[in-house]
Image 1 (cartoon, rainbow, N blue to C red):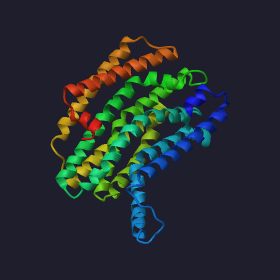
Image 2 (image 1 turned 135 degrees about the vertical axis):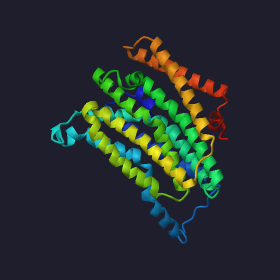
Image 3 (image 1 turned 120 degrees about the vertical axis):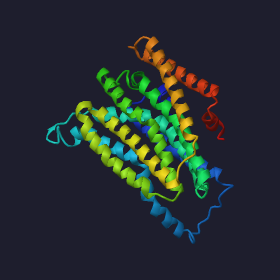
Image 4 (image 1 turned 180 degrees about the horizontal axis):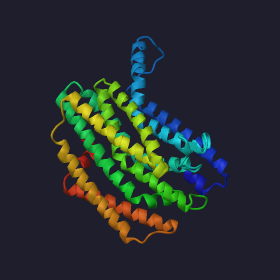
Length: 351
């Protein structure tokens, strides 16, 4: 629908927004219909409600803690948005002084958030979602459960760490490709978006690990520990926001969110380690290998960006971006193959 809109139709921006919105709604309806169709041989639908009340009550009992536990990033993003919108919603002063943001801060923040959400949504949350049934099945077997957690953590880091490093390195060209051009961001806006993306990029790996760790607690029927940690992280993020916006403007909001996510990862891992009695010894060597692979990938990506001249035109930014991302992917995949990293096999084959 977006491609049709871009290539074939002559419409106003308002009409384009309605077209995209309706297309998204239609895609969601088609997805729901497809899922129901795939379930036709697995579930027998009926209209009888007897016998389901206890299950519904149990679902609602756990719903709020799970919502808060998995929603830390969204709650922190909401807090970021409120502070970024302060000049528009409240006024020019904050805590007795001039607010360090302006009316463009929320636009810079909001658009840039989409760039780190792509790898998180496509890969990070997908890994945690796919791992949850295996975690639930192995919850009564401590050794098997620990092995499943280790495998999920290694796979999440295998995807999330190079995504963090890659986004950090290509941030200037990425925001230029996505947000420059006719009617796009100004040069100052691109620099501000790049600074925001640098902050969010640092935490991409942690966002992914947090989803996996939280689901590990849920598999053990513990929804309250992630919730308590989540609420504490929201308070910590708001404090970090109010501390960092003065020297860094809206970029301080992104850095606070990323740092808090890393702290949350450490707390969740520590609490899960205490609860389960420890993980398998293979977790540290596997994660160390992933870190080395990601650092080498980052070095190659940085060298490619260093050799290609600084870009001025949109096509030059696109060329630098494609070259850097391509070199990074090829380097990472090749090294993983040479070193026989099992995470690559897990990702492709699922085993």
